[in-house]
Each structure stands twice: as structure tokens, then as C-alpha cells.
Image (cartoon, rainbow, N blue to C red; front, side, top):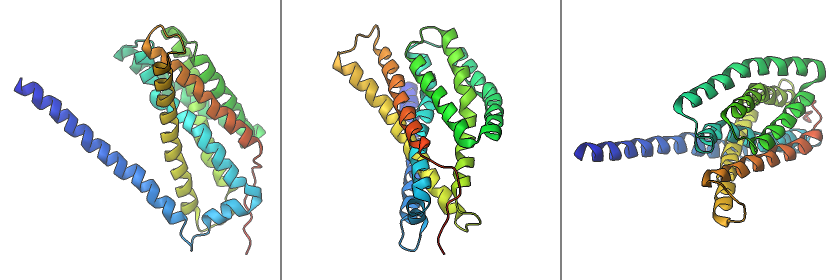
Length: 253
């Protein structure tokens, strides 16, 4: 009994410490960098919203929405597989391997498409695929179907992350001394969108489960609606990204 209590409270203590570290390291770190960007002597935000017809601002808006969907899928795919499809530990390990192996080929393929058609075209194709993945995820019923869907996720997982950074870099002023500041803002958007995506996933699941409007064979099926809701992020980002012209920002003076 004493051993069980020790293990229980020991694990809780470790969880609290790790959670506190995460909040301090990531959340408060992002907030600090965000405030730094808005200091009066820092023109980064002014540049982003003033020049180039809001090109950088529009891209960051698109990035916010699709990155929220991407990270929600990546972080919660294993939870979906375990709770909805009842995957075992071995099945989850195989899932991770499929994602990582296919991602290598996906990153190479996205680079080839980008070289031929440009970054924007490649990003929009991948956003269409991500939308289809979320729509298909609602109907998944077997392990084999989920593995095939995971291969699709791996195909666009590495590519969209690499292309996002390279596209953002192309939008920045040439020879700017503030590259670190621009990418600090990008990093803030990355972290905040991750929180937003995972929050929406859990919020939709809770609403569906507690409302009783939707027929569920099991409570965990509410996650299917969460996956479907993530498609909205990609659809919105498609429309926003369509208005972005990939060219360098021109800063006066």
C-alpha cells in the first residue's frame, strides 16, 4: 500500500514539475518575445503590416490556421488511434514508424513540386491533402485504414513544415539585420497556433459528447467530430494563402 501511494504521488509530482517547466519554457517564453516585438523601438510588426500589401501578415495568418490543424493532428493522432480504434502499444509504435519513414519521401516530393511550381503552389496542394485527411479521418473504422491515412499524413507532414519556413524567409526584406526578430514572431505564432488547435480538438469532443445531439456508438467516437472540425483550419488557411504573393517585403529607407 505504501509503495502504491509513493508511486502515485511520485508520478503526480513528476507530472507537475514537467508541466511547470513546459509552461515556463514555452508559454511565458513566447509571451516575453511577443512583448519584445511590440516595443516602440522595434519596427518588425510595423514592417510586417505596413509594406508589401500585408504580405507577411497574411502569410502568418494562413500559417496560424494550418499550423493549428497540422500540430493537432500530429500530437493527437496516437490518442485517436488508442481510444477510438483501440490500438495496442505495438500498433502505436508502427504508426510512428510509418509517419517518420513516409515523411522523408514527402519532404523530398514537396521540394520537387516547389522547384517546379513554386512554394505557394506546393503549400496549397498540401493544404488540400490535409483537408482531405481530416475529412477521411471521420470515417476511419479499421487499423489498416488508419495506417494508410497515417501514410498520407507522413507524405505532407515534413514538407509543409519545411516549406513554411522557407516561404516565410522569402517574404522578409533582403539583407535585413532583424532576421532573428522576424523568426521569433514566427515562433510565437507556431506555439500559439498549437495551443489553439489542440484546444479546439478537445473543445469539440467535449461539446459533442455532452450535447447528446449526435448519435455515438461509444463515447470516444466524439473524437471523429474533432478531426472533422480540424478541416476548417485548413480551408480557412487556403483562402488566406491564396491572397499571398510570394515576394520579398520592401522596407522604406
